[in-house]
Length: 356
Image (cartoon, rainbow, N blue to C red; front, side, top):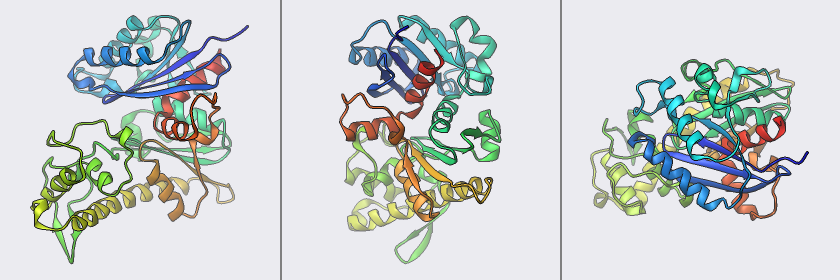
C-alpha cells in the first residue's frame, strides 16, 4: 500500500520547524519560522499557517514533537503538552501522530490526540530522542551533538542504539546530556563571569545586554537564515549594533575601540562556550569502549561548533545531512543547512514514515 506524504513538526518555544517527506520518504522541503510561543498560542497558530501556505500538498500525515511546553505561558509542562497538542490537532488536516519518545524501546512510538494526556511525560521535550533514534539507524557508534539557538543536546549512540543516562529534561541536565547553552539566544553573562579583553581579564556584567547571536555575527559563524530571534535591546542585527551590545558586557561603548577589538572579544566569548561544550563532549565520549570507532555527528544552528569539537578531539566528523535522502528538489546547500538546523522535524517524519 502506498504511503502518504508526511510533515514532521518540531514545536519549540521560539521556532516552529517542519520537514515534508514525499510518499517514498524523500525530503521535499524544510522550513523554520519564528514562533514566540511565550506570547500566546496565537503565535503557534500563525506559524502553522505560515508553514502550510508554503507546503502545497494534500493528503498528508502529520508527525509532531515538541519542546514548547516549557515556556512560561503554561502553568506546567503537562498543560503545555496538552495545549500545544490541541492546537496542532485543530489546525492540521489529516492523520496526526504525537511522538512519545522513550515510551517504546526503539524510540519510534506515536499516539493519537486521545492518548496525549496519559502520555504527556513521554511527549514533553522528546524531540532530541527523535533525532537520536534517526541517527542511531545510520551510525553504529557516535556522539550526536545538536547545538541549537538555546540548548545543546549530547546523545551517545553505541551499537546503533541511543544510550541515555537521563530521559527527562531534569535528569538530562544533571547528566549534562542537556546543556542550556546555544548560539543565538544565550545571554553572554551565562557563558562566563570573567573574560580576556586585550591584555587584561575583566569582569562580565550580569545584565541582559547581549546574546551569543552577537558573538557569532561578529565571528561570521552564524547563518543569516538562522538569525530569527530579537536582539537583547530590540535593535538591529548589524555588525556595528552587535559590537555595541557586546561592548556593554564589559562596561564599554563600541566607539571606545576599533571594530577588530570587539571581534577579538567575540572570539574570546566563543572560546568560553566552545571549551564548555568540548568538556561535556569529552565526558560523554569516555563512556564508550575505547575500541569503538566513535564519530561526532553535528546538527543544529551551531553545528559549526560541533565540527570544531570533533577537530579538537581528533574524531571523525559527520553532518546529519549526509544521512538524509534528498528528493533533488533542494539544492545541496539548502539541504545541508536546513536538514541540520531542523533535524528533529526531519527525524520525527522519518520515524513515522518507517513506523507505518
